[in-house]
Image (cartoon, rainbow, N blue to C red; front, side):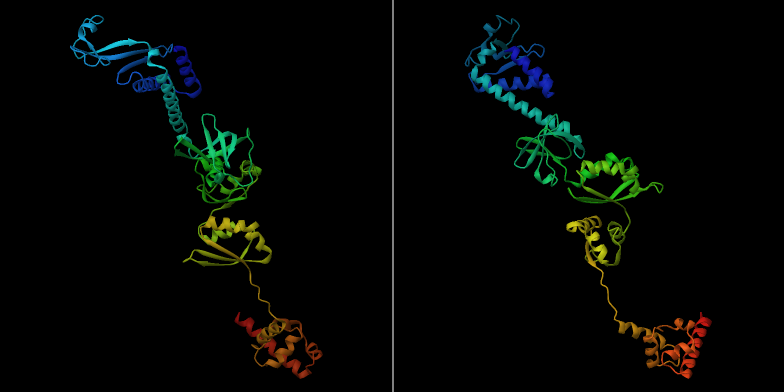
Length: 419
């Protein structure tokens, strides 16, 4: 039996990382508890296991008395002094016994208790090993899929990536290596459960921490973040150092840094913009290259109405409304993106406006102004190259033509003097 115990101790120490002293304590407690429920019920025992060779020794603890009333727990003084001459009444006498005497049932119970204790040790070790890694990226190997959840081997423990924490479109086969974000350690009936994610925005944030040294040292800060896992991510960054371009730092030389992150995300698009104060300004920055024509703010309801040209509408809204949704998350305001309203002005209206412009010239009435506009003379400045004969060609007589030119020139001179 000693060789079996020694094998267990060595295996637990080597494969499970459980110290011998801890394991021996668990085995001893389990054997004593099991024996107390078996053939040695009601009897106090002492059990020791040698950590070097696994040899187990057991003793029954008997109280030294004058008159024995319970032979299982008591021993007469005279009999005890045969082996220990100095023993006194009330002392505990250790009577060595064969461990095999503990019985087969006790041994089976002890084995079950040992396995239970082992599981408890493993649970405690899992928590101790990973509690400091919560909020960090870990690497593991996909083992299997259970009811949509991925079981991932992290080496020292197995973790779960629930279906809700997986990225749509990503599929991993057993044996494939995967990087995930350790989201939390959840308590369950089976012990601590490691919960992983690839869909959380915190996963992308941590990738930027690892890839961009300026973010890691605090020079560049991610001010706002929005993500639709598997499709697109938008981040707004600022810099505490005016010499450091926050967007350039995140993108890297020839896009090396952001490309590395995009590869890890399986091709998910990543938009990096400069952070600016104010919802309107930040929204305009996030919607680039679309150019808003008009922006209305509703501060009470935290709502933005953005008008863009018809050509920019598809860019601003994005595929299936992605860009609009992400911009809304980034800014923290509801954003309505609409096509710019273009008011068409009729030819008659334009002529009317031009005629009203000529009416400001003293002495030119509505009828004359309308005739001039219909022939392309829509403003006083146009008359600079016009001669009397030109007006006569339009149907005015010589006197009318000279009169019109005189009044227009007088108006222009007056405008020049006042300016």
